[in-house]
Image (cartoon, rainbow, N blue to C red; front, side):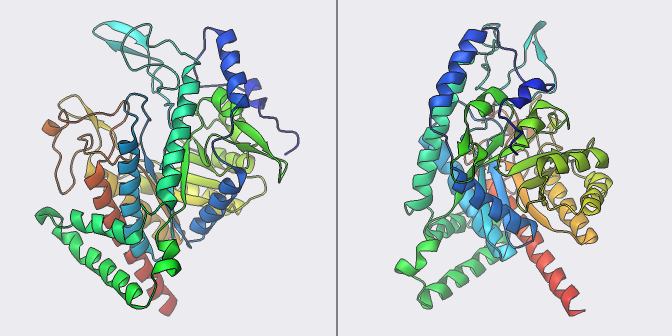
Length: 456
């Protein structure tokens, strides 16, 4: 790793990144960020890597979720709390279904930049540069707002630091107590339309009651009152990433100090590109989005670049194909992994391949398509004898109307009611929790199939 330097990416082809018009201002921001403390620490990244390694072996399960793109304007303690709360509920349900620990990773405290399908957009005959996330430019459709401003990186850092501070307090200060979390979940199942999930919630209640009767309370129950919660984001804006990269004094290795886990998107995974070059040199766990255009040959090159020592937990492959397309693509990528003997953790992103434009003009994602891709993902892994290691959702704890469907059905006509996302549609709190129940059913089913295989 000694030949790698955190600025090496600057010599590689770059895509999906802004061209700043004021290099002096950019340099000043980078120098300032380089003096700030890192947002995360090497020990935390190593702990997450070990947990992801367990997920790759089927001894844990990853739940990764949060905003498509964090917003400066919508930033609030309540929004952070509500998303954290829903993820805790989802994790409890998934833990019951999987019978293994659930690794909780938020798309939070750094998910400010977004790749775009086109460099410009047109509105009422006016063409302007695309909005690329609050860390780069602004959503308002004006020429001034769309100019990339490097000072926004400083605001992103401040918001990420505040978010992490609150998440750490929630994680260890009693808010994450398993009994309280379950009471919230019971509230979800009281509605007539959600009664079908009441049986599983009741079984969780019985389990908690048994633990209480067995004396797992008080100090003995510390592990039931706190959680490990990690943050992640797409490492898209490499000036920001480089400025927060630090040399870990205990291992003499480089840490991306911007988040515990970073990932490379489907649009920036060029084997000889800047984003791969940056990610290959840090000790953090790295995610790699794999879409329909990912070839087996490219995947083999990328696995060797991003995880040359074949370390467990280092590389998470995040599959995103679209409902009905998983069987067309995932088996060949699984075969490529097996041919290389690579250690990877397979995760399903059922969001990005299922975005459609509604009749009312809003981008949306049908709940049934999201669920369908998860079910396809499990079915392929079951057929291949490999391990589905987790799920990756764009979701929020807020009561938004951005994805259609779910038991409390959001229709296309409802989308305009509370459509607050700056980029992509997110599952709301009820849809997220419902999906957790349905994924838990898949995990329970898979566990039963594994037991039958062992007996036979």
